[in-house]
Amino acid sequence: TSFWVAYNQMSSNFYAQSCQMDLELGGAQLNAAILNIGDCIAIVICIPLFDNFLYPFVERCKGSKFTLLQKMACGFIVATCALLAAAFIEIERRKSGVMPFKSASQSYSNCAPPVEGGENNPDTCDQDSNGFMGKQTCMSNLSVFWMAIPYFLIGVSECLISVQVYELCYTEIPIEMRSSAQAINLFTTGLASSIAAGLTVAFQNYIPNDLNQGHLEYPYFAIAGLLFMTFFIFIYVTRNFEYKQVTKAGYDGDELDDVESDPVLDGKVASEKRMSISESNLIARIRTASQ
Image (cartoon, rainbow, N blue to C red; front, top):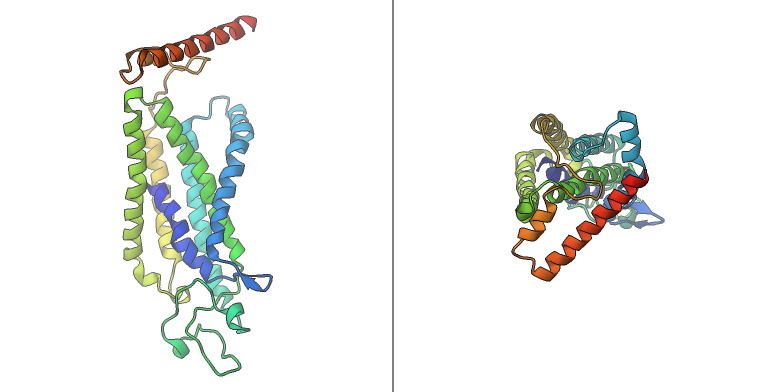
C-alpha cells in the first residue's frame, strides 16, 4: 500500500510541481503530464534489462537466487529515492526563483492554478509592457526535465514491486485462491488512493496553489519515511517465508493434482493440461539425463 501511495504522487504532487517549473521547449510550452512517459519508459526498458542482465548478475554475485521478496524489498528503497529526489528538486526549484516576464506564453504556466493576491503577490511575474501584473502562476527557472528523475525511479520501483506481486500471486498461492489474492492486491491500490488523499488534507497548509509559498517537500519526506519504515517491516514479516518447491519443468508437485480436481475445467481442457505438464516433465528428464 505504501508503494501505491508513492505511485499516486505522479498524478498529483509531481504534476503540480512540474507545472511551476520551466516548461518551455522550442518557443512553446510542454504539458507537464507528458512526464508520465518517464514511468512508461522505465517499465519498457527495465523489465527485459532486469530479467536478462541485472537479476542474473545479482544471483552470480550473491551465489543464490534473487527471490521475489528480495526484489520487492529493493523496490521500496528505489521508491524512497524517488520521493527524496522530488523533495530536493522542489527545494532547488524554489531557490531558482521565477522567470522574468517575457510574454504570457513564455512566462505563465499553462497548467498551474492561478495564484492568490494578484499584484500583491511577490512571486507573480514582472510587470509587462502594458502595465499589467497578472494573477497567473509564473514558471520557475529550473527545467521541468529534472522531474524525469523521480518519474523514472517510480517506474523502476514498479518493475521491482508490482511485477513481483503478480508473479507471487500466481506461483506461491494455491490455485483456488489466486483470484482472491489478485483482488486483495488491487484493493491495496484503492486503499493507497484514500491514504494519499488523507495526506494531502493533512499537509494542505504546505501545498497552496502557488507552491512558491508552500513546502511541497514536506509530504514527500513523509511518504519517503513511510516507505523506508515499510522496508524494515517487510523484511521482518517475510524473513521466514518458504517458497514452493518447483520442478525444472516449472510446476510444483501439486500442480497436476490441482488440474485434475479443478471443477471449472472440463475433461478436455484438463486432459490437454495434463498432457502439457507430462510433456514438460519428459523434456526436463531428457535434459537432466543428457547432462
